[in-house]
Length: 391
Image (cartoon, rainbow, N blue to C red; front, side):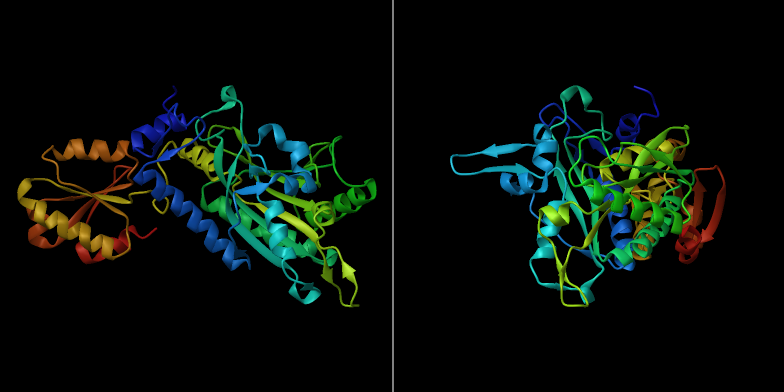
């Protein structure tokens, strides 16, 4: 396995593991789940700022809902199905039909629109065992699913709003090279040609209004609508499809979603499917390989490790660690009897950006010696350390 393979990096950083008793599943370790939650909370905060409200929907739903939505015909071979004598159910491979159920639970007015819903949806797909590959291809994963129910006149503004957020987030994670593909109707699809004509025209107009530079991928749309796919180029020159914006006139029709328009008539909403990362698991795999495990300070599971130089300075090391934690940093503590050089090497291997070395001199002066991953060093007062390290 290549040293830059995300599985090798994760083993070195103690992030997660997989084993044959859970094929395609992930056992997250404390440091790995800390990274997972940082990413999840980042997306959660940005979605909230953009007007999305978070929901949670069931993982197990009856077969008839999947048949009605069209997903059974498309995905049944990759769905985990539970059959009993009374009714068949399936673990959800995606969350969109469930979000329509939330929309349908109340009578909606045009005044309620756009309605923006978001979910970290736990999904399961029965991928072939030969296709499984670390975090890149799993059978259980979480999607940052989001859906907007809106009137046709809202589409351009909603797509532009989401794209601005999406590009900002990619930049924060260190991805500045993003390509956009406009994917049109596939041969096997649901919905009428008229609906597809309207959906493609609306999404293309929205892409142009958002000033996106895109290429056209004929026939690569979802079975229910055209889409914009966002491909990130990593530090190794590889392209990864992550985010998506999909315009859907089919599921609202199939699942009977409606609202009351300004004239008092029943109207179908446009449904816009959104994701920034796609699969969080897969995005973490990409992120690890893109940065070679050297994640930016704000993303690192442990931002600083406090290491004592001698056993005598252990009490001060604990004081430093406690102070930095109180100041909001994620801190590890290394009180082993090893030499400081060994502790520095281990911290670098674990992907910890900063080591705060403390010895008798630092304890006497109330300082810490900060050693950064780029080799630079600085001695600062303990009270100033958090401000110096603030990401």
